[in-house]
Length: 265
Image (cartoon, rainbow, N blue to C red):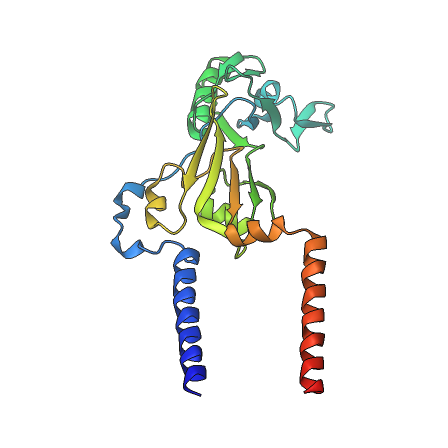
């Protein structure tokens, strides 16, 4: 009886310690109360990179004045047989490997490395000489191809568009349904391609709140997040279906043998 109680005590202690150890590996931002977040101040702006697809539209008080710069806009004929601009839609511009786009009338514009606001100001200044002095053009730029990829031990891996041109690593993982219980929280891999085509990778620890201060907390367009499986999942995947069936068969045989022994005693 004493031996049974002692065994149950040991088992309970082991389960308690293992649960404490497991929670330390699962919880995000564990040291958040001790981290100085001053370094994370400031708003994030994405920068335009080669192969980005930009939606650009020009608006003026006189719609016809903006027409040459909006080659993707719709038109309809008014009652006086004059062509009037209507249903203006943005035209897509693919940024080439040098960071340039070919814009109507004004020609080649270097936009690589600029934020959306900087790109809008640049194009606006290039447009002014072609417009009447009374015009104050408004240029709107959107990154149409901004997306990130999340793969590995998450519930819903996939490619996710970023309409706000700003997404943190936590938001991306949330879009993918968060990590499964088998995903490594302390070793998430970020794959990134820089503007010159060079590839780089970074290992990120979701358990550490210092991640918020990291330059990799906000994702760039085309970033890839890969969540590695932990040892339990890796070991499970190494066991094939035949091995699983074999263990099941052995378990059944053992149970039947034990039952026969007890009956025949």
